Length: 209
View 1: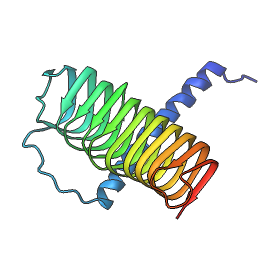
View 2: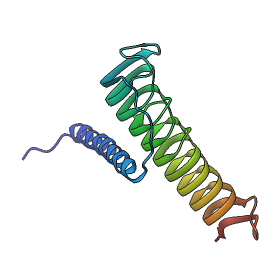
View 3: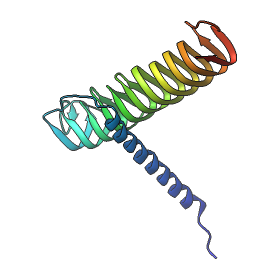
View 4: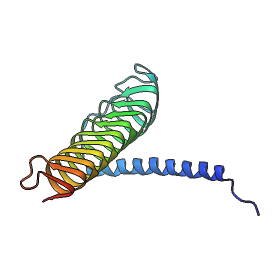
């Protein structure tokens, strides 16, 4: 009886995992688009595929919206993207609804998933950021997992080495957790609520409701 080669199985498992991550991220972006009705003016130009070498050296100019897939080798910049964004540095001046995967991801509003060494959503973030540094600059709802997680008005879960948020509702899990105001729970070695009414600092577990 023949056995499955471990290397073949590993490649197959990794492929299925990547496919699941991408498909789930796109689905999350689609659902978020339905739940959050954000009005914007679409670009007059759009494409289903974009290839960028280094902006402005790319198939379609920066103001173009991408509905489908963009490949950035190493850097691309467009207005908005609905689908999959792959590259070294991926930048959108307006919204992302889908998945960004690279070393650095930048977007305006983000609805879906960002996976990179550094992820920044300058507008509203609804979804999941995974990376060394994750930052949501305005209203955010979802999950951040990384070494450093930063949020403004954040509702959800942060898991990392250092977690910070301005107004936080949810659970912070990390080595150091810091927020200005908290409605929820902090679990970590050092927990700070800078504008709390009761415990400004508490090790292991800090709670405020």
